[in-house]
Image (cartoon, helix red, strand yellow):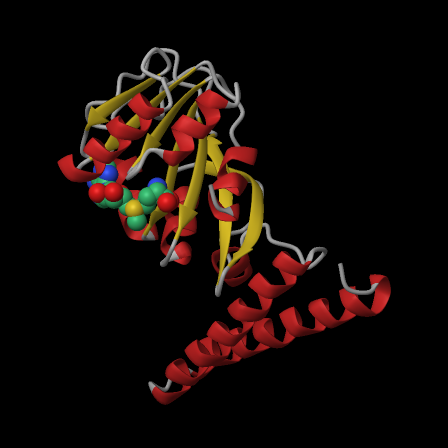
Length: 233
Ligand SMILES: C[S@@+](CC[C@H](N)C(=O)[O-])C[C@H]1O[C@@H](n2cnc3c(N)ncnc32)[C@H](O)[C@@H]1O
């Protein structure tokens, strides 16, 4: 279990977990073995990764707690009693498409806790969540190797979240600069904004370019002021 998957685990709340795109099944096996859930579903759309998840379940003697399911997204996942859905290590567009295709997600009571970790297109996923009345309640940035990720915790709220769907939300979500992982995430987003601003300027969209450059500069200031106030953490 690497730090990225452990960060996903830390945002799970309930007792029955579905891990969508489980690959080796590390997350559900770890949670079940450590008593962090009562039962778990290890789900994947591809037979080969699912075989590897099944082997992991067997080797750890977790057959009574972890069930492997061949499923495209949430298609074959039984919703009964499900408290948490983890979708990690995929692009933000694919994560949004999987959520979009699920017919019961918006009627589950209490709402299912979603733990989402996009590798790319985080802005697409954040916009989809906002447009479809899902609120992001927490976000944990995480440095793992050369990469910095953000893991989102969200649920269906049935109404627009109380924050705006602006450039800051799309690029940074709820990430703050109080930790080193948070600062690194915001630093990388600042660089991405700078690069995107150049593209906008080149295509003649000066307003968008200015908005992006302004946010990029604001993020750097926030990072500096956090280090200046509290020293590195
Ligand atoms: C890069 S792995 C991520 C594994 C693990 N979740 C993690 O974060 O380390 C992506 C996995 O998602 C699976 N996958 C891709 N599209 C899927 C879909 N529509 N439904 C379920 N699984 C999918 C792939 O087969 C692959 O095993």
